[in-house]
Image (cartoon, rainbow, N blue to C red; front, side, top):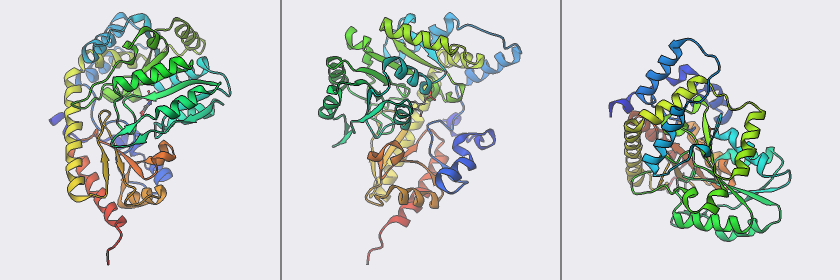
Length: 395
Ligand SMILES: Cc1ncc(COP(=O)(O)O)c(C=O)c1O
């Protein structure tokens, strides 16, 4: 897969992942080999690059509206890839999933209301809830033979008077679960019973690995759909995160109106013109690229898995079902998350530390597999050095 083997030169373009300033701040070292941050070391869909270039060369950047083609490309994608039939009236846009989330929290809750999350989970959930003066309720995932939702703790938290919202990540970042229908149904029924709204962050929904299936939560029934808001974006799917465009799918007319009012109040409906082009083009022309990208990620996962099982048996790789991220249990080598991160940085590797996703993630690390094989090979050799430095010498 030639296209996916080409190393880019992102360090010269202010890529956060490659920034020495950012690395120094977080890892106390710079020039580390970056396997952190959820964006890709791949160029995006070739036709999208052409379309953005063409649009830029037009040279006029006045106000524009989102065309029918913009919405159609998204609707067609969801139909084709996920067999999900979305009505145009359900689609709301926002600059990013991270900005749609606080808008939803603002319209669905009041100060001091409780919001449930399931750590270890994408760190912005906790920081957004806390920064908005809402109570953070944690229902940690349980690790049995796989990561599972803890329905007893969920029910206990939902029963509390002021619990108004649960935010779920599906596929789950960082543990890689793609929630099954029975799990989503059980969660939705509990939420309905206790008057708790569900925000389903499905930014990783397109990256489903072979053998697994993404369930469209909002097709599980009208009552479930009207109690759920789904957040989507082309960012993870096509490596377009810097383009800043996302969607919120809302069928509930009251939530829809409130979301719209908020978006218009702050004039958040005008994205960058180039982001509109990128969005439409990638959903319209990105399917081949997308299929190859998944193959590349799956190939990388296989390489990493084989290496770990033969050479680094102290590491437990949590098999991802979705996302291009892999969650590694390093606790046998070093349970202290700070010492673990120091050892990895010392070896020259920048990873996402498990404890950034909540204390439940301590002793784990997250690696990003959306990269050329050569980038992964270097990461594996640095991981090996880190493991060797952590191994307790036997007498
Ligand atoms: C689960 C999840 N939600 C949201 C985001 C950020 O989305 P955006 O770039 O649209 O703000 C990320 C980025 O890693 C993520 O993993």
